[in-house]
Length: 280
Image 1: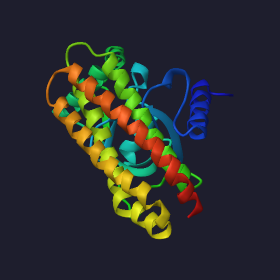
Image 2: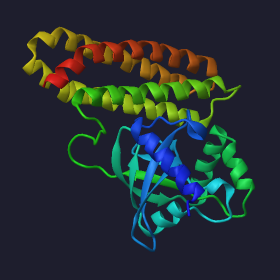
Image 3: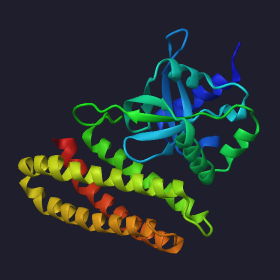
C-alpha cells in the first residue's frame, strides 16, 4: 500500500537531485538538504528532505521537529544510533558527524531558529517533547569537494549558483526584518562570507595558476578576476563591520553593494573560465 509521507518525500528527493537543490511546493525558497542516515534497527540507508540552518564553520543545524509530532522522526533515531550521515546540498555531497546539542547550546540554537522562522515555535507548542537540535559537522576529506557536476565548467556554474541563491535568501531575510538584526541572520551572512572567501582563495591558489600555465592568452582575464577577488574581499569586510552593529539599513546597503559587484564578477568569470575549464 502506498505511504503518503514516503511518496511525498520521494518526489521532493527526485526534484531536488534533478534541479541541484531547487524545489517547489512547501520547501520552495527555503534552505533544504537531503539527509541520508543508517537505520537504527535495520542498517538500511534512508534519505529524507530536511530543512537546515547555517551555523558557521564546518557545520549546519537540523531540528527534529516532525511537524510537532509526539514522536521523534525516524531520521533522528537513526543518527543517534549511527552518527555518521551523508549530506546532499544539491551541489555538494559530503559525509558528516551528527552531534545532538544539549543544555544552553541547544536552547540558544533553537532560539535562533525561532528568530529566523516562527514556524519552529509552532512545532514546539504542539508537542510535549523538547525538539532536538542536531549539528552536522562536515568530515574533512583530502582533495577537492565532491560537486555533483558532469564537467569542471558546470561545477563552477553550480557553485556560483549556490552563492546567488544564498544571497537571495539573505536579501529576503533582510526584507522581512524590522528594527533588530537577528542572530541567525548574522550567522547566515557570515557563513556566506566565509564560503565566498574559501572559494576565491581556492581559485587564486590552484585554479588560476593551472589555467594560466595552459592558456597564457587568458592571463589578462585571470588578472582581472584576482583584482575583483580583492575588491569583493573589501566589500565582505565592510559587511562584517555592519553586522557588528544593529543598523539594518547599513546591512541592507552592504548586502546590496556586495550582490551587485558579485553578480557582475560571477558573470565575467563564467564567460571566461567555463570554456577554458571544459576544454582542459
